[in-house]
Image 1: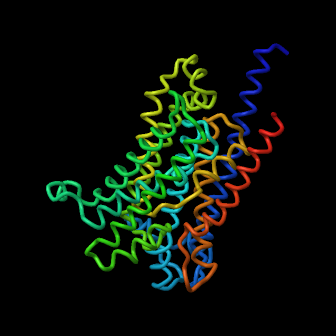
Image 2: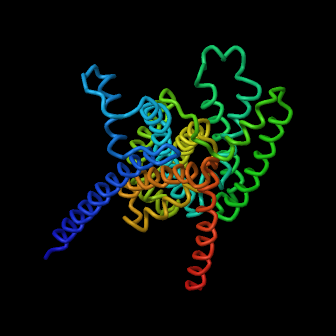
Image 3: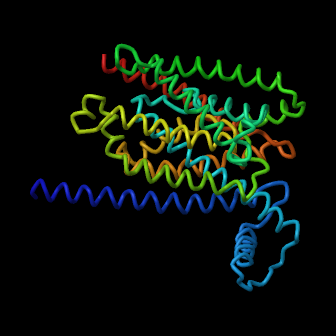
Length: 367
């Protein structure tokens, strides 16, 4: 067999492998969404979840679908309470996983994550500033409901720029300075968030911000899903278009420049995209940690490190991960409900320690 034929066969095998994973994870996501809606203080049969959902969709499309054997309360729980919540969990999981993949390639550090590097904390400062003091008066009528995500985007972008600036030493990116700078900025921004809450005139702000800063998907409404859905879809498309550049950045700046990648311009564009997606998701769901750290590593174990395969698989794995994390936060200590960030931290913390131990072991083998 010629080398060209072997390469063609290898590409075909990789496409089949990717198609299999996408189909399997797509089915697993559909099953996860169904069970997450069905589980809760009021149990609803999985098939009834689908019947109610199709009935509601039919009504909005002016289709005369007959009502089934379910109560009004079950219908309200599925359509108005649980379905928008699990859909936002899936969108947030996908978006945070994509952001994690992009950040780890940009800075060539497998420990990079918007939560650990202070980007989520920056988004929190921007969002809390809008909640505590409101948007500028002259812009309040123009911004409307976009004021909160735009404030979070501004905070996330400022944190990105600060961490990136701190991580540069001698014109090159230092992985150690990146992590330490991110942790330091995250602590500073966390203190700034607390200061704004405590000095605000709004008495109810402290409790709501305390719950929100631990990550919460409770109370999600249908009209809140459009913006994150559009941003996650656009983010996926833009990152897939930059897959070759992401592959090159993983090899280092010299390698990327040799392959014709403008590393400075590419990183700037990716920072804006990461800040926009992170800021919007933080504004809606709070700073949910470790999804962007854990999911990219699981994905690379499944399909390798080529970004045309990593990005779509990471989006599905991230959606499944956060849907189940949110479901667990609702049912583990019912009737009390945990913030979803507690669950992701309990998973992500040990995973981070394992990553540090693994890196140290690999460096020891290489010495």
